[in-house]
Image (tube, rainbow, N blue to C red):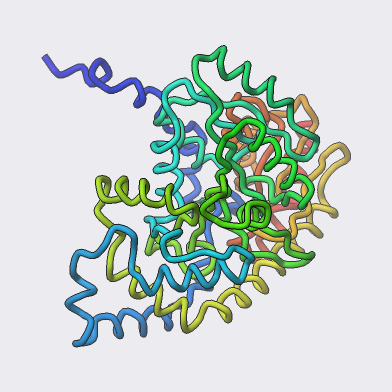
Length: 406
Ligand code: PMP
């Protein structure tokens, strides 16, 4: 008899499920579909020449041996130094000991779930939140409770009691303060300070996801949660905030390169986890990334900002022209996403099925981003890959599909 795999999977595997949306989105490979679904960077903007030079340079005689060899779990020291200087420029005085290189910030989220969550513990997240974070944390069998940082959170006692009732304690609050995926929204400084207050009262960590932080198109930058925390505590080693960064949205996602910046006590533990998990991120990629960061980061950030700013403006203008009464959407100051809220009785997943079939357009329905399965009347549009023509035509068709469903 064939092995009953389900019977021997660990309980944690029960929460690892492919979303139905992922299945629908497979249809998007069909060439006539205008897609606002994939939230990925535009490959036309990648600094290809800089990477070509970087790989040639790291594979040159003097450094090829090191590039192809095992290396330390903490990460390539010059790359950690570069990130350290970047963090310092953003108001976070830190040392190399405060930085761990990870395989994308996705690995950072997995490690932090592993480090902090026992089954039944509570993770505080916003509704909606980044789907990949929920997937990473799910493996550690948490319970989720809802953060509402803009409108004011519940009391510390209320969070604490609900967590205890579920058999664990609140461990951390996770959020993307700048240009969140999926909403595009940014938290103002006051909301960030209030969240640090709540975390202090609950005595929990704050996980700050800065994946889109460099992609600001207008408005004034807000200090990061980690910068605000360091300002309160006077020393990064006394902070409760763990910052996850990434090169994916600025330089390129294919090298899988991100980092964690936090108190050295936390980093030391994470280094052991990295060692046990994959020893270290690829040496050659870290060296190439360092080369490109040194030579091309500033120009590259300017280039992607300018391209995405234009696309955001174009999509906002098209929404204004084509959305029927009763539909609202966010106006992000950066990032890659606009979040659309439909009248309550409409369902984003049903709308997607209809939109693909009758209008050949696609987006991501919002329910999957909600830990409690609500948000059926929401959807995410990404403008990062779309041409002006695709935006004009696609948003016009979206307006029609929604109007027909109303
Ligand atoms: N955080 C957020 C908010 C994201 O949107 C993404 C990628 N879509 C990630 C983290 C992971 O990115 P990476 O692993 O490429 O750094």
